[in-house]
Image (tube, rainbow, N blue to C red; front, side):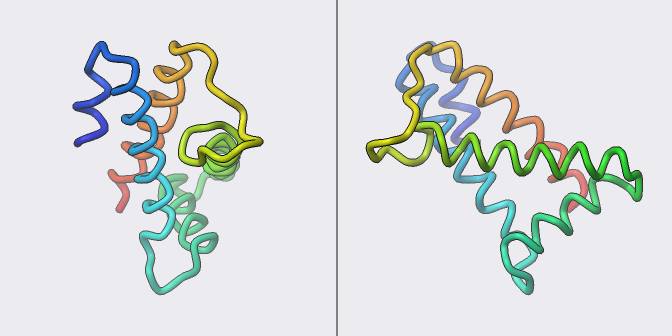
Length: 110
């Protein structure tokens, strides 16, 4: 909720924080099944979302992996040297919407 409130702001720094908070939520989502390790938990979520449809399972598995990669490569959650800076403020909209869509879908199945 905090991320969506920040995202609706016209202030770019609020949108940056919104994307960071949303990515934090995405990382926590992957640990939803606390009896499993993070990877196994994410795989279980993907299986639930895909409804035994192999094409959908591949799609959502790829999306989980791609969002993880984006979060690790870009300066979204990790601000250390060597991460790719977000040079266009419009990218925050793209990153937010892409991650939000997957989280929103996953929550419908948990």
